[in-house]
Image (cartoon, rainbow, N blue to C red):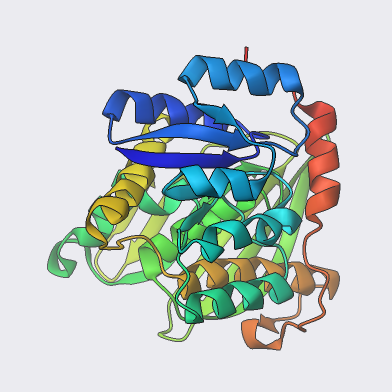
Length: 312
């Protein structure tokens, strides 16, 4: 059985993932290292609930006893701080979404992969059955994709990355530019709209609602029809975890490669710059290496301030 080590239990993902893994019995979480905002009470309850072998005092200790690390802290600025111990032992890591928040960290991840290190990720929505089933349909049946329209709600980046990675699931790579096209605001709820242009001529449009939750739905315009693709989020983690287990068991990686994962981050960085520049197009290749990107530390503080105890 695959042995997983979790770094930080900030979000609901370690809880939900562990529940699924217990049922499927291909892998299990055996250890945890926590330097996030969850207190000792929740860490100990997490350990007890899933029968973990050990609470580790450092990432190095955790990396010694597992086959793969799951980096799951909500401060994406610290993700790279936690991968080295696993890479030093030639062990892969899964980095939860968003894998990074700026170009500098994305470049470091690319360097790691070029050195032969394995980074798996990231948004479970990219691998949703509904998206994959649509993509696998014969083109003569569904038509060639011209535009993908997607919705997502909760916040701009931490949750918004889901819809952008899902667009990557539909279209693959090749995004060139992003542009902010405007917003609507009602009762403090802000809905922003962005458009992505791809090299092949395809476009994608996405909404991110800030101030409330929205389901992820997609409308796909093709050369022959318009297809409505809703996603059942109650089942969305299973395909992701199955692919991770497949990789660990067979060595065959069917998850998105690092270029695809980073392209999604670049899309959102370019979209943010477009908004800050009153809606001008921003090429993904023109994002400055020193661009501050999205602030993971600030998001983590806000997330922690509003978080309820979930490991009870």
